[in-house]
Image (cartoon, rainbow, N blue to C red; front, side, top):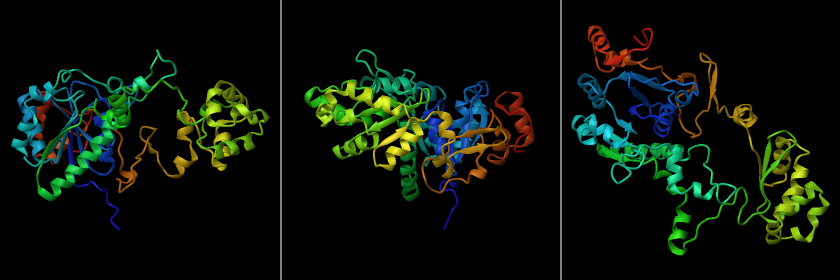
Length: 395
């Protein structure tokens, strides 16, 4: 059986920033793709929040001035030897660099180029800057979330970003397979604002047909009751419970032994829905006798859908995730990171590397990928076309 990384023959030039693009290319890097992160040497890539650190592992980093002729020429040399180019600037940026797909394919007609603008390469919003939070808001998702009609809330995770990242992975791999068969390169556009729309298609259809607008429901459900998050005995720890059938409701009553749940006003879904305020008050008093973990185990053992609302500390110490070796620890920076949720032939975690600091691989790439001499590299450094990291890495 071949256990080598699935993508160890794929080289990717990564011009992406923030979250959606870097997460997608990081996923490909986890499976062995040779990802070259191209950064502007004038802009730091590290931060106190460690956002870039979690999104740029398993990537080399070259700090290169694309706004100079020499820097652009070096980039095009990298284009010539690469399989994929991904960028997520506003459309005008690549045009200003003279690095549109028409420019790129002249150098490498077989390359797969993917642009990930916020609102598309054309149209009235195309030059607007975008983040996952604004993109999810404009997609309509936020209009269906919240606890009060006049106060919608965001997902808290900028939903458009991870969805776009997964779209990037699937789309690139599809076209990479196409290229391996036909030898043809192509151009792909994945818009940050469009990606979340695929998750609410039924509501778009319903509105177009009948004018239906999904109401704000909080944690409640139109077809299930009880369906909510209930407090446990520990401060700010909660248990999510979802009763989906009358059989589950019967089991729940047996487990709780709460006499008042046998009241006729809770005997059917319709009746429970009508009296949810009273029902939730009763259930909350019971759930507060247990920890969220105890409740999750008790209810799941009795085939009742329930899940602990885990905080970050609980996730890191979760026995299930740790038994599956989900996390990765980088001992040299003493940090634990999320692993790779997609199964397959990944790069062995022993070979995973934390984020390269700005320019860490500049000299290595110029010397080993493009054949530059030391004097040529020194000249580029003096002209500030490139920036190496502190110290001589990978020489």
